[in-house]
Amino acid sequence: MFGLNKIIPVEPNVNFLGLRKSFLIFSIAAIIISLGVLFFKGLNLGIDFKGGTLIEVSTKNTSISELREILSSNYNDVSLQEFGNENTILIRLQNKSNQESIETVNTVKTLIQDKVIEFRRSEFVGPTISSELLYRGFQAVSFALIAILIYIWLRFEWQFGFGAVVALTHDVLFTLGLLSILNVEFSLATIAAILTIAGYSINDTVVIFDRVRENLRKYKKMDLVELFNLSVNNTLSRTVMTSVTTLLALLSLFIFGGEVIRPFALTMIIGVVIGTYSSVFIAVPTLLIFKFRPQDEDD
Image (cartoon, rainbow, N blue to C red):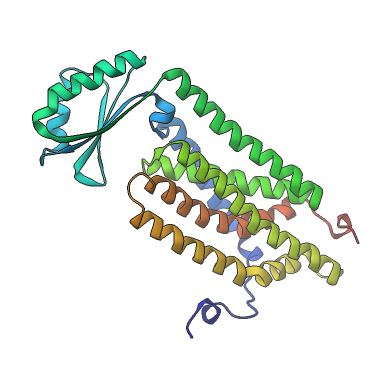
């Protein structure tokens, strides 16, 4: 029967650590680009974080440009995008109060009622609430990174803890950069996806770190680079198979889950790929950067 075990050798012998400088340069470049994109372009904040009014409509084969032309005559800050198909359109407008939002919805209905089959929903999030949600979201991610650092530090050694946090920070920044480039809507669901990615990535990293610790006790005189390579190769089959099966589920969610869940699924897909990469090429080589030595490991 064909399977991943046919693709990945039972005892692989890939020199991952030999490639660490090349991948380190790639990762540094990726993070710099991500930070640049986030600084100059920013994230495509959803209504959860940006505030304002969201209206979903089903049109009579009316183009976005036609609706935009009608609404732009009354509103300066209006954003339109297709939602699932060309006949379903999301309209976003900036409002400062719930009363203003109600008036906006009524005005929009009057302006485009002859172009629309159905007004499916309307939502309003105030600027105070949206700012608080954004702050709480990034606070949750920061607390998760700190908690992971403490957990890994207690379970292993401080070098392992910092290695895990470096890899996780890499994952989060890289993912955010790609979300900005791809113009994926950043919402509360995206925050949930990033926290899930952190948990997934640290799980991969802990499996490899655990094998490193085990091999340190078995091969006390082995060169560190060779021992790290052995540990990564020992867990390679498990890492790849877990990632592939997770990606298959996420791809199904992305394709069949509908537009509402699609940003979450896409964020997860990006994060799983980056998390798998960082567990091997960032977390483990970081131990060398932090001058980890076998004598630091408990006997």
